[in-house]
Length: 557
Ligand code: CA
Image (cartoon, rainbow, N blue to C red; front, top):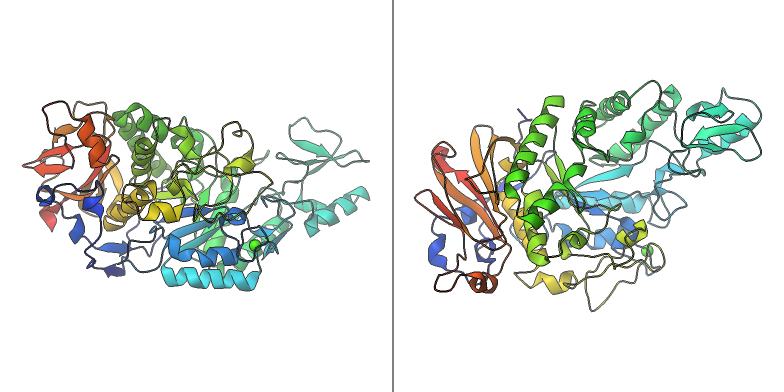
C-alpha cells in the first residue's frame, strides 16, 4: 500500500471553458452526458506525487541577453509552467521542476561540479535562487536539483588539494575523498595524473574524478550539501549516475540509503529520483536503497515500451509491462513511486521517435502522463521539439533553446550551433490551437490532476478485451478503483464492455483524443459514421482510434 496522501487544498472547478470534452473540436455535446470529468475538482498536490517539468537551465530562458538561459529567466516563465491558479487552463499544469545542474562548474552541462554550495555565475546567484524557490512556492511547484555525487570537477577545492598532497606522498588528508592507486589498476575508467605514477578513478572523463563514497569525510561533506539546499527550500534531488556508485565494498544501494536517510533529517518529505540507465532488474535492485523513485529507462527512448506501443498499436503488451513494473518496484520498496518519461537530456528528442507524427506523439504522451507514479516531461517535448537529421550523436543537440514564440526566437545556445527543430511552432503558436500537442499535454495533465488516485495507486489488474491494441489497467487507491484505457489502434475505433468485476458503476472521468474530428471522419468506413468521441452506454464503451479514457467507479460516491 502506497503512502496515504493529504489533499489539503481541493479547489472546485467552476471554470466553464475547460476544453477536455471539446478537444476533438466540435464533437457532439449530446454524447457527453455520462462524462463527469467537468465536475471533478482539480487537486493541488501536497505530497511527492507530481508532474515534473525537466528544465535544461542554460537553454530555457535568458533574462539578461547574454545568450545563456538563467534562473531569472525561469522565474520569468513560471506562469507558463504553472500560474498557481487551478481554475485557469492556460498554463501547462506541471507542479514540479527538475533543474539540470546549476552549481558552479566550468562546463556548459555542469555535471562536473567545482562548488556544490553556490549557483554558477552564468545562471545567477543564491539570492536569485531563493527568489525562484519563493515564486515556485507561490504556485505550488516543487523544485528538485540535479545532484552529482558520483564525481566532482577538477576545479573542486578538495580535488586540487588532494592532487597536491598525493604528489607529495600524503594520502591521509584530502586524498581520502577520492580513490588513488599507485600504478595502473586492473579496472577500467582509471586516469593517470600526468608526470606521476598515480591513478584515480574517473569513469566518465579525466575531468570527473570520482568521490570515495565510503570515506566518512565525503559523507560529512555531502550531508552539508544536502542540508544547504534543503534548508533553502528544495523538495529533493535527482541523483546523477547512481549505477556508477559502486566499488569493491558496495553495490551503491547502501550509499543511496545513507544519503536518503541523512537528507530526511533536514526535510522528512524529501523526494529523490535516481538515474540508473539499465534494465528492469537493475532498477528494481536500486529501489532497495529506499529512495522514492528510479527513472523507468526501459519505457523511454525510441525503442522503449511507450514508443513501441504507440508506433505499433501495441496497447495490450504495454499494460502488462506497466503492471509488472509497478508490482516489482513495490516489492523492493513498498513506497516506490514510478518515474515515467519519454526522453531526457541524454536522448534524441522524443518527437524523433514517431514517424507517424502528431497523433502518435499524443498517444505516447497520454501513456506516460496517465501511468501511476510521477511523469517527467523534458522541456520542449510538450511542443514536439525535434533533433535535426544527422545530429543524433551529439548530446548538445538534445539541449537546444526553448521555443516560446516562433516569431521571436530566443537565440540562446548551450553550445554553438545546437538548435532544435519545431515542426509545430512555438508555445505561443500552439497555445491557441486546441488540437496542438501543447494543448494535448495541458489536457492530459489536467485529467491526471482531476484523478489524483491514478498517480498514487497500484495497478491491480490488466484487461485486454480480446484486442492487442487495447491498453487497459485497473488502479486501486485507498478503496477507490479507476481504469485507464488507451485504444492504441491508429485506424479503428473499439467497442468494449466494462463488466461489474472491473468497475461497479463506471463513469468517464476524463478523456483524450489524438485525432481531430476531421481526421476521424476521414477514417470512417464508407456509409458508416466515425466514432468521434468516447461514449459509455450501459457498460459499453466506444472509443475512437488513438484515444484515452479514465473510468471512475462512482458506486462509492
Ligand atoms: Ca543569461
